[in-house]
Length: 197
Image 1: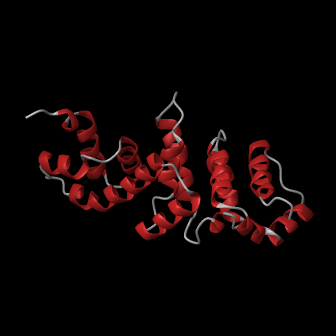
Image 2 (image 1 turned 45 degrees about the vertical axis):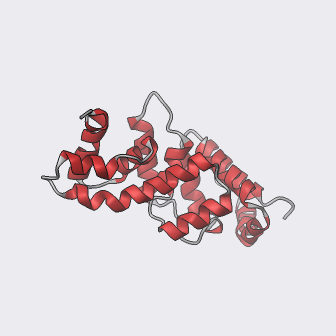
Image 3 (image 1 turned 120 degrees about the horizontal axis):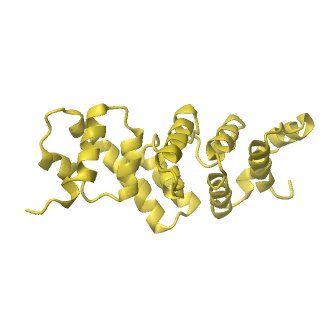
């Protein structure tokens, strides 16, 4: 009641240290989850960013999803099994480097619609660079239908992908289930982006 961000902190510590929140405390947490509405978007963003700094952020995010904490950011926001798997995959693929928060956020918000994403961006007051990556990710996602075709021309691949941020391109590469889309994005990253006429 004094500070609703303690709800986030409890979840982070529970998952980091592998314990279970004591039943009465958990009951109070669920009862008072509405107090998260009383904290501003900047503080909510800070708590989300702290989750992403955890060694395995998907654990804390999955628990926050289970308890209904993420719905306080937006009713459509979920950190389901898909998001958890993609975050873990990003961490494995990019070793020994750690994925950026921008990349994690873009994966988390990948299934939002454009209006939903704009609402989240405004509420959480993301910096311009982060907002741009999130917007680019969804815009590029809408263009991927072009890249599903196996015989797509290199010029079409270039025009579809060029102009979007590197993080947005990598997120779509990791998020897609289409081998053709993956192959075409990889072709762009390895060769087409640097072709000079």
